[in-house]
Length: 327
Ligand SMILES: [Zn+2]
Image 1 (cartoon, rainbow, N blue to C red):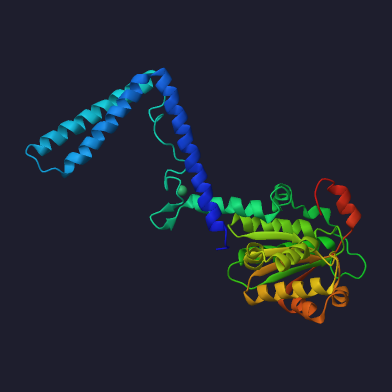
Image 2 (cartoon, rainbow, N blue to C red):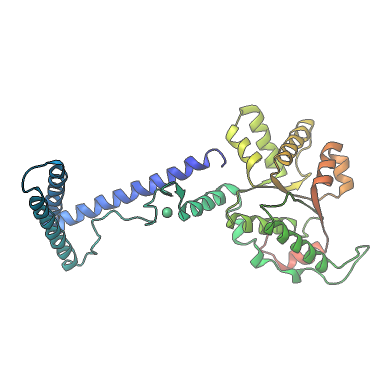
């Protein structure tokens, strides 16, 4: 697991337990004011329980009888306490510590295994860190409308934009379904407004919901991050960009292109490819342009290791139809 996540989750559980303890304290204070007898009973139960545990170790005569008497007293007091709470319209467990997950008692673990709630917390944390939390409420497969693409062939394209986007959507689903078993990477190419960012967001949401760590960066913010890593030795950020399950780089070619950016980008691509950590890159440029903009080394990586998806269609028509969605 990525450095930092384990400790972040442990912190989340610590905070849950601390806040539940605080709530219990407030409930006790309330009961102390309204039904002080209940608190007296609680204190008496605590005293008897302590007595019980001390006497279990003793080997005196009549030990068993004495212990049974103590246990009976404790039981009677507990019943009395419950009766008092209920007759005053309080729930029977009002003075118990409440757990948000009764399975692991808000520790995240059941013996040494991770509880189901641990994974849910990880997904929430991944969402927070993906940079996509808000946009994915709109940009997801549920809102993916294939009807926005024309079914008429235009220009030199061999198939209609609609058929083309169907093929790309199906490639994207394959990518998702085989995510843990294949080494596939995706390269989305095409003019602005043809749905590359939208579809990459759809892929991100599916994978995040399946518990994968997806990190989204525009090429510009990625280069900014890479600079930060280089000049500030930010190991945590480097680990995240290098080891997240899917790194999405949006709008490749829109960043300021320098020798530094080209070298750092190549290093990142190369290191992720060596580790078989997957990427989804989108760009408004075609292959020829990419070759001109970037070094041979970068272009050959993109050509050799990525499944190419060429987006085409009428930008304006799509934009008119989905004013509120980000393409
Ligand atoms: Zn749990």
